[in-house]
Image 1 (spheres, rainbow, N blue to C red):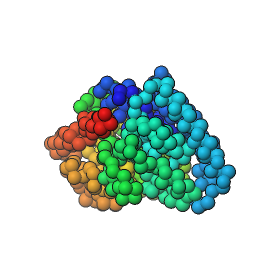
Image 2 (cartoon, helix red, strand yellow; image 1 turned 90 degrees about the horizontal axis):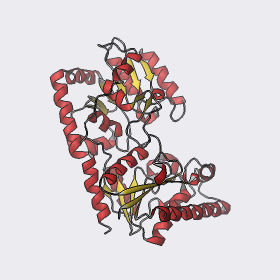
Image 3 (cartoon, rainbow, N blue to C red; image 1 turned 90 degrees about the vertical axis):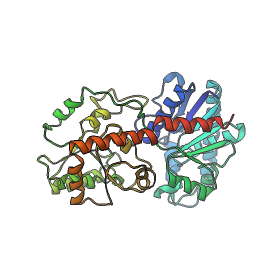
Image 4 (spheres, helix red, strand yellow; image 1 turned 45 degrees about the vertical axis):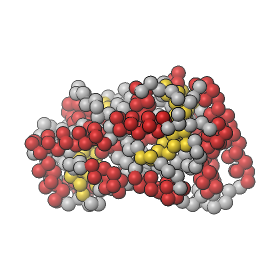
Length: 413
């Protein structure tokens, strides 16, 4: 089994699913596997890609199906018929993908977890049932974790395909809570493979780093506080603002690595107004920053996210909820002190590893600022960040992914 087909709605950009797909691809390729890709949007190598626009969750028909099925409990017979037609079409395209690249094993990336594209999930499920194709289903989050999926008119499809309980499928989840829920709700055994980072390859120096700091107007003695998140409510950007306010900095600024308004501008506007009342400037730099760790790095942007981390003095990670926490691992990789809210997955899956962080419980107080000052003392900072890097290498490295993923694939042989 040396030819692997990744299947998803989108494998492009810097969303969590695409980033983790890239990491799995890197690990498989270095172990002698050839990887190919099927999705509605692709940044992957063209000669290994099979683009099918109907697989995208933003296809106009898929959006119409969403609108018709959510918030109601009954769907029209005509809609059921159209879903089946689309499922048959996508299944035929998947068969073509398997034939064209002579695929031995498939890895659906979240396509069998959340019903962003119902016909695609049904098509993959039927394909597996009809062929016995060995499958490693990589689930990043589930339909029951999102409020907008709670009331729907396709519960039959959810039980059939999101995810399917078939003997040819090995199920992978990214955290302990998801593992328990999948076992409890669907009776499906699974393996936990957390998000990872390539800790075996330390970050090289980035020459653009100081240019960014100068461009943003930071002087040598100014503290660069970074929140490496999107601007959406669950990222709790307000807590980052409060942290900067409490630190009583000469130039109180919070740098946010992603563009404001990723999911609408109302929350971003609310955060900006809140920051103004507290006397904190929010600096959004997402329009100037691209990724350095994906299929198509952000070479059209003047800086990468690596440049941003290299400049940061402190990383604020105050999210109320995360499926795992890619930004946490990135901060560990770049040896930066981290101020983190104790979100549920952090408490269960990350904190027990023993990382040295400045943690808080839902709100930021003066004691957090006092701990930051102590953490930033040169000797403490070096000792703690070096320790964190070694822990990252032990628990969340490519080598951890390699061991667990390859053993799953070998279980089919």
